[in-house]
Structure formats: C-alpha cells, structure tokens
Image (cartoon, rainbow, N blue to C red; front, side, top):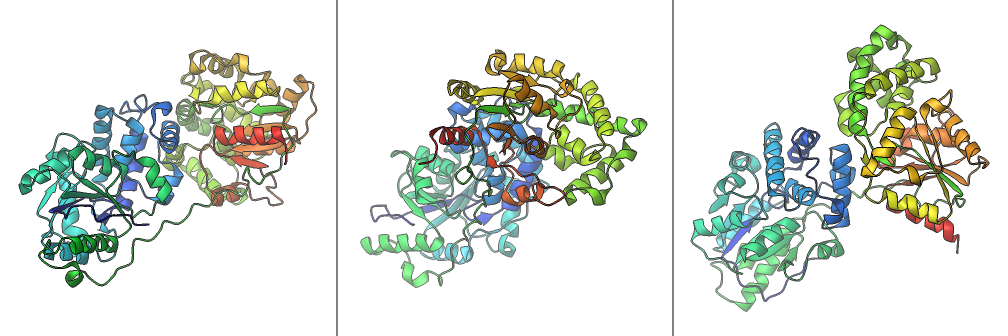
Length: 562
C-alpha cells in the first residue's frame, strides 16, 4: 500500500519518532497506561475528558466514552496494540494542554516500573539505519519520551548497537510542550544547524506525528508499521496535513530514496542500491479481532412492541458509586456469616468466578483487577458468590443498599445519545420501561438527576429490586412490568441488559434477550460466560456493542425482512 512520488526533495535529515516507528515498546507502554488510567478520577481528569461531540472521529468518541466509564483502554486498542499514549491523550483531551500535561506526567510515573522493555519495531531496522548513514543522511529522533527513558532504551535496544546512530535526539523534557507542538522537531533542526523545510523529513506512525511535521513546516512521512488500511489512514487527514508519503516498511523507505536518486544523481554520498541491506520482512499485521457470534446482522428477531432496559451500565453510568459501596460492604460479610455461605469453587461457572470467590473469602474485598476492569455489577458479584442461596443474596443486597446511601447520586448517561434513542422508540409506538435491582429510593433519585433534567417522562413502566420478592436473575421483575403494561410475556418484549443476570432473567421470562456489550467483551469471553451448557443454558438472542447498533437493530426489525 506504499504511496510516494518523485516530487519530494532529497532529504538532508531523517528525523524519526521513537515508539511505534523505530522500536516496539508496546508491552511497557500498555502496562503503564493500565496503571495510569484508573488514576483519572483522583487526578481531576474525568471532568476534563473531551465531550464526545467535539471528538475528531467516531473512534475517538467511543474511546472517550469507554475511558470515562471504565478508566481503562478499550479492548480493541489492547488487542490491536497500534496507537501510542500521545495519540490517546490527544484524542481524549483535545486542545486541553494542561490536562494532557497532567496525563503525561502520571504516565511517566507509571512507565518507570516498565521501561527498558524495548525491541526493534521491524526486523533489520539497525541495518537500514546504517545504510542511511552511509548515504550521508543525518539521522535524529524526536519523541514524547522523557530523556531518562530514551537514553535507557537506546542503551538496551539491539544490545546497545544503536547508541551512535543518531546525530541528535530531542525528548519531551528537553522542550516545553509535547507533540503535536513542533518544538521537538524544530529543536533537532536547530541542533543540526538545518533550516525547516521540505528537505527535512519526519518519519512517524501516527496522525499526531504528521500534524507535528506539518506545524514544523517539514515533510511528514507516515510509517504504516501498524498496517492500517488505506481508507482508515486517508480519513485522518485533510489535504493540508496529509503526509508526503506513506510507507509500510524500511524497504519502502529505501525504494523511495532510490527513486529520488534516479532523478537527482550524486544526491547521496553512496548510491542506495550499493548500501541497502538484503530485504527484511515488514512488521507483521496485527491479529484480527474476532467479533461475537450473536451479531445484529445475523440475528432474526421479532419486532419489539415493548422494550425493557436495565438501568446501571446500560442506560446510565453509576460505576463509581457502586464500587465504593461494594468496597465498604465486603468487610461486613464476616460478622454476618456470609463468608460461610459462599459457593464452593468447584460449583462456580468459570475459573474466573472461582478465583473471585477465593479472593473475597480470603481478603474480604474485590480483586484489584475486577475493580480496574469495571465490568461486573453488584448483582453479578452476588450471583457468583452465593449461587442459588436466595437468602444470602437478599442479605448482601441489604448491606449494599446501606452503604450505597453514602455514595449514590452521581449518575450520567452511558452514551450521549441515549435519551434520543429512548425518544425515538416512543415515536415508533414502542412501550419503554426500566427493570433494575436498584431499590426504589435510589432509582427514583437517579432517574430525576440524570442529565440534570431527569428521564421520568421517557418510561411507561419501571420495576425496582424491592418491588418483588425475588430480584434478577429471577424473572419476577420483568413479568411484573409486562403485567403493568397489560401485555403478554413473549418474544415481542425485549429486555436489554449488560450482565449474565439480565440474560438469564429475560430467557426465564420467555422474552427476547439483547445483551448490551458496553464493556466490549470479546467472543472468547462471551462464549465463556454464555456457554450454552445443560447447567448454564441461557444465551442472548443478540449482542449489541453500543446504542447506535441497538438503534439500527430496532429499525431493521421495524422495516422487516426484504
């Protein structure tokens, strides 16, 4: 997919980005990001996340939403391992330089635990860099790395062979601003005594790198080592900031220089063909993400006449309050005798469930990874811990409610367009309701508080945890809701929820189960939590990843098959 022309001037200097271009430090970078993002609340950065309607792309908007709710990287980013922390911070904070600076500083503190895990991004990178030096091209590095990290990684990569390859290096703490501010490039040119212009090339792997090159007034060369497709790359750039060339590998870079040499003989100290190394393979393409089997394009559903929604982590985000209450609640399990009523590990549905039970038994708190993932509700936690012991679960819910009174009230729409979707359903003459394990005192307060105006006008019915003797996963709440609507419990009633508890309740009630995968579980995990076995038979009828997919699914059923 390499694209370049012979209209570029011969380079006097090649300035390289570091991570994702010359070297691979993904293991250390993503470990540091996973340590840093849970700190967003204490850093005061949650409120400074960019509003989704101001994000540059739809992908950026989804990333902001995911980080705002879960304080971790979207699983697709972790699976693809293509983007840098600079790209992430620019996507989620936009032009808020102070917020980006705070985030970079927190990242650097976390990165000190991991840096040094570095390897060449592409096989043969050292040989190609040596060839460029033989051609008489100056080499430099401009990076958002701090000096302590770059110097250590230069000593480490390829057993230290790279330390004398570069004529200049400039790091984030050598200048006053992070990229996309052009200072990191301009300072390199100043060190080398070279002017800013098209004969200086900046080779980088991201949109931010190309924006930085453009602002510095030099040629941006996009290194597509992450194997983005052409349409995706083109969507990032306008005519003004588009890269001067797109390269998939260092072989492509040598081909470009050979093309320029043919148009300008004697331009290089050595002819590219005489010094270029034997061809090395390009960086491997990332493994494709496997999508869930229960895809809206495949599922065949009955048109809904009634749609019931779960509340927490489906329509709204109350995760902070929930996890604070769980933290306060678990130490009380010992005096209440609830520790002895937990399921035996061998009776757990999955090995992960067994580990959760063992950890709570031993430490009377949630495992840090469970809290970091922010993907499991208190109802699911109680199901995992107590199984079919209804009395123990009722006791746990009462203790949770006692502590939740100290934290509830912080509530936000799970996605920006949730209200518009709910209003759209009513215009389609679909009855809409909420089913929640929240007690009514909490639900009504949150219903009135969400988005500052409340959503009470959006629902035809609501049923709370204390409205029936048994809570989800028993279907009593769902059956009470359709009874109030004077409608039969059949597959034309959809129940939309984010947990296994929601799916079980819908299937036991004879309703259509729509699993709202806001936590972005992958197919392997969905298969694990919905195994379809004799012991655990309940599986969703369809999986949607966000409200845009859900709205498209409703409209497809509204229109009907072709």
